[in-house]
Image (cartoon, rainbow, N blue to C red; front, top):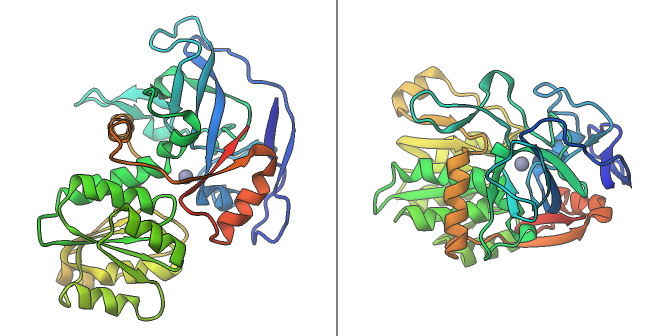
Length: 346
Ligand code: ZN
C-alpha cells in the first residue's frame, strides 16, 4: 500500500519534504478484535508538525520510519474472528486513543491510563491506504457523513467538543467565553459552544481568514491577535475577563494572555501545546481561577459529536489534499494557510 513515512525528525521544520510517499507492506490482522480500515480521509493536525519536530518523543516511543495520522475515518476492509459490532464495508470513524479497559464507576470505555496508546504517535497511523485498529476504537458513521468529511471530528472535533462541553457547565446567560485560535479545533469549538451554551463567544486569531470563518460559525465578536487584543477582550467583558477561556493554541504567546483574560473564579482550558504556564501561587489564590488541560475526549463524547454532526449542528470546514501531496498540506498548516482542517485522501 501507499503511505507517507517520517524517516527523520526536523526540529525547526526547515526541510521541504518531511514525509515520503512510498510503498510499504499492508497491515495484517493478528488479534481477533482487530479491524483493518481502508482510510477515506486523515486530518492533518498541528501535533503532526510537533511530532515531525521530535517534540513528542518525550511522551511516546516513536520508532522511525513512522506513519503519522491520528484523525482518521474510512471503511471496514477486514475483521478479526471476534469482531461483532462492525462489518466489512461499514463507514467508520476511529477514536484517536486505543481503549483497553472500562471505567469502574460508569462502565465507559477508557483509555488504559498507565500505557496511553495513540495510533499515529505510539504506532502507525492513518497517512496510508490502510490502518489496523481495535474494534473498540470504532464508531459507525451515519449516511449523512462521508469519511473524508468526518475524519477531523476524530481529533480536532473531539478535543474542541470536550473543551466546549466542560466550559458550558459553568456558563450562564450574560457570560462571555473566549476561544483562542479559530482554526481546525477552534471553528468546531465555536459551533459546539453555540449548541451547548448561551454565552457570548469571542474568537481570537492572527489570521483574518480564520476570523471570517469564526464569524460564519457563530462567534459574536472577533478580535485580531496583536499586542492589544488582551485589552480589547477585557474592554468587551466590562474589564472582568471571560468566565471561560479555551486556548486551542497553547504556545508561549497565548498562555499568559489566556490566564489574564479569564475572569476571577473563571476557567482556563488549555487544548493546544508548546507553551509554559507560569503563575504565582498568590495569583492562583487571589483569583481563584481553575486551569484544566484537555487531551482529546472520550468514546462517548465522540459518539455525541457524531450525533450533533448528523443533525447538521456541527460542520467541519475541510481542505482536501491527495496523500501524495502531504508535504504541501503540512507546509500550508505551518504557514497558517488552511481554512478549517486539511484532510489527506489516499
Ligand atoms: Zn491532533
